Image (tube, rainbow, N blue to C red; front, side, top):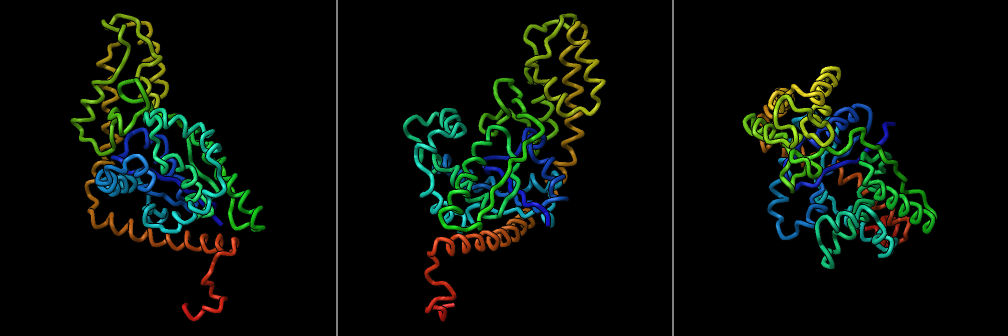
Amino acid sequence: MKKVILTGDRPTGNLHLGHLVGSLQSRVELQLSHEQYIMVADVQALTDYFGNPEKVMASILEVVADYIAVGIDPTLTTIFIQSQIPALTELTTYYMNMVSISRLERNPTVKAEIAQKEFGESVPTGFFCYPISQAADITAFKTELVPVGEDQLPMIELSNEIVRKFNRLYNTNCLKESKAHLSKVGRLVGIDGKAKASKSLNNAIFLSDSAELIKQKVYSMFTDPGHINVSDPGKIEGNVVFTYLDAFCKEKDEIASLKNQYTKGGLGDTTLKSLLNDILQKLLRPIREKRESISSQELMEICFSGTQKARSVAQKTLVEVKDAMGINFFDKKSCCSSFF
């Protein structure tokens, strides 16, 4: 049997080039050899967008459109909406009793994200506990591999701790441990060179951007501030244009030659940006055209069909969990079996 993979994205805006190289391209490959589930994580998005649910709802179909446009096939990959799977919420509730507050506080990923979002002492409980919700997502589908970056490894660790504790406490093996499937590509820096490419920071090139907007963003990219004249020697390190050329140009020998020329002097930033613009336009044009060809009705049908399948799988796991705990009150074997 194929190994099960679970991955997903928070619907807080359209997906960008960082998503493409960091996860989307690998998902297209993995769907051929694995049983792949992709979750549109709207519940997780609401942990810090609770006051703006309209943004989350408006982004769901946009994210799914990006999935289909890059080559994710809904006949091979199950795409579902997190909030429409009630079993995930119930599993989260049970798992909360197995994790202490101090354990959550030690989670380095949670600490880093709390600092980044500047919550201070006003951390929403839902956000604080979202690693437990992730454990519910992972275990509900008997996931074996979870594609993540290194910063998400603590989440996999906590999920496996919950699995081991649950199975030991209730003398069962109904929950499965999972392994991280590390991304081969590091996080793509934003076009401003200051942080990772991000929807919230608006420093990314989105898969849905027009040709004109792509060019505008490329020509605004941060390079070497000391490289004023073409003849000046330039720095490669921290130069966003070269970072993107490394990520998207297949002609590695050509890039090596350009780097050599740039560091010696005699190569202008405009020439490099023109080359990068041509590469990205060629890459994103078919994605944009495919995206524009998909109707909202088609996207709704993909979401509905995938969510139905995911709901059935997660519900089966929930029943196993409740059986193990002995809390399936209206069990078919009980005296109230006539209810069923």
